[in-house]
Amino acid sequence: MTEHKPISDWASLPGRHIVNLSGGKDSTALAIYLKDHIPQLEYIFCDTHKELPETYEYLDKLEAFLQKPIARLNPDRGFDHWLDMYGGMLPSAQVRWCTRKLKIEPFEAYVGNEVIWSYVGIRADEGRSGYESTKPNITPVFPFKEHGLNITDIERILAESGMGLPEYYSWRQRSGCFFCFYQRTGEWVGLKERHPDLYDEAKKYESEGGSEQFYWRQRESLAELEHPDRLKQIKRDHIIRLEEERLRRPDRTLLDLVGKVLDDEDDDKGCDICHL
Image 1 (cartoon, rainbow, N blue to C red):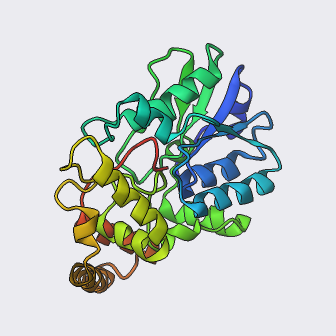
Image 2: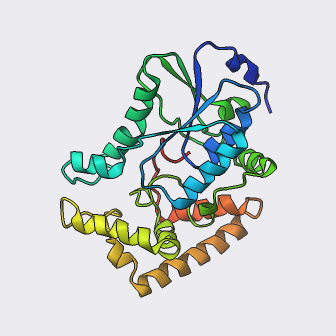
């Protein structure tokens, strides 16, 4: 690992220091990584009111570990509130009002015009930059990139802390709303099998959307995806791809292999704000 800036250098900077948590592995590992070095660190979570039960459980577990409160934003203005404000127009990759109204604007309103150091959990082995506010008082900081930490380091931090991975990582590798349009095929199948009530709720949004042709997956409705023959095909293909990937890259972790297979099924980039 190359020489890097000590965390204490960030701790001495004047202003508020904040980790914006998503309920995912990377932002959680970042909170743990910085915990004992930046005593004034604050933790926030922008709640869409449409997260998985496992996400809320994981955040409660993290709050107990950190022994500091996690500020939950959007207490009374979740997804359904903004859906009404947008006249029933559901968000999509082309019109991502969910990200703006449920993540970016609540965070920027919460911090106001104070000097903010916003710590972001993007790793050194990722080719993305994440959200960077246009407000001059908010400066992003990327400790994992700065210190050269990759997916193996993140898994180690979570294991050694006792936090482990969120339970949903056995079938889904992105945090965020349970009906997020960036979900991959296998993740929708996981939702159907583990949370059929939430799958039905997502399906109901499709039928009640502003257009009868609105599908979260664009090319296929959730009613079509849940057909028994379609489910069998998806699961069969997933097993075949996973075994092929395991043989091709025997040195990689199961988490990494599953992520690669899911990406091959649906190569949508995902949201840089929700999925940390």
